[in-house]
Image (cartoon, rainbow, N blue to C red; front, side):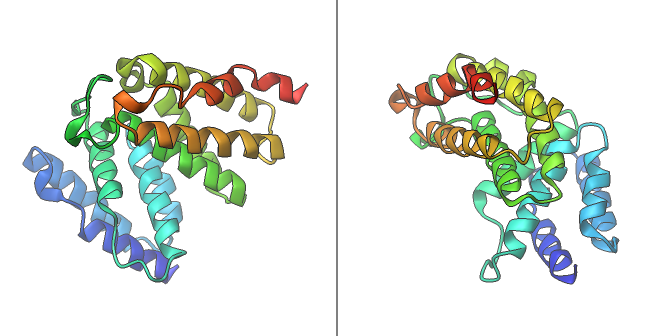
Length: 226
């Protein structure tokens, strides 16, 4: 528990508070930070934050990064990608409209836009939690489903919106039928997570065909459970 507290302190101390738009947002973050760092049970406090309206994605992101860093003793700090995603999810939690790149282009010519990357990361979190059978998989399931059904990913359009819609259907099905421990679910999540992550990290001009297999798999997933 002490290790998780130290890891969480490292993450929160490096959070780019100065990039928040207003003093009110900065004070809100500092209030949450102080409450988390004074908690005796980090995971329970993060799960409490998860239930606060709008903060599910931010709390799930913190929980995932804490778990991952706690399992990697050599890790010295949070990655720039995780920092960016946590900042964006915190802004969304406060109702700030985060700029959404269009499918036709992305900054820097590297990978996809912020929304696609956030969904890819959330899917990776959930896939890892299901594969590991961890207690926080339900938390990650709710967070991922919320993102897959959210207006941000639908606004991106094209393959991302199609993938998200099919993924949401799959997530509801496995939850309704209590299939989180089923090996077929683990295989589907592993395949779709790696494919979507590759797609999201590829510049729009090179994405053609990268999601075809995953889209087909999600369209026909019910046949695997009949």
